[in-house]
Length: 86
Image (cartoon, rainbow, N blue to C red):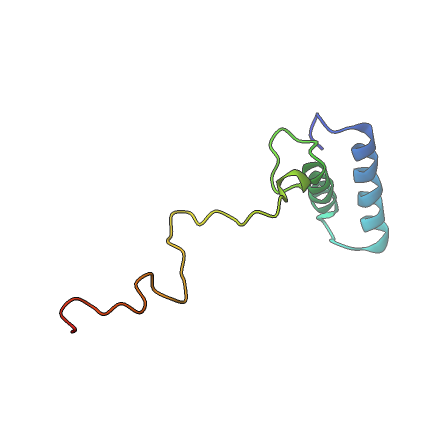
């Protein structure tokens, strides 16, 4: 667990790890999976420096298009004849 994790998150990590070992889930990866789960919870609750997709970023706004033009079903010039097609 990261040094900045709260005692509550440390407890959750230990409990998850012990549960996975007891159940035989994720053999050899119990620590990794438990850490990933707890780190995801920390991010969702804004307990990390950088918020990566947590509750605060779920504003309902659409994702950025990354410079790609939006596709539409109709052309902006629909209904107008082309120049020279008269």
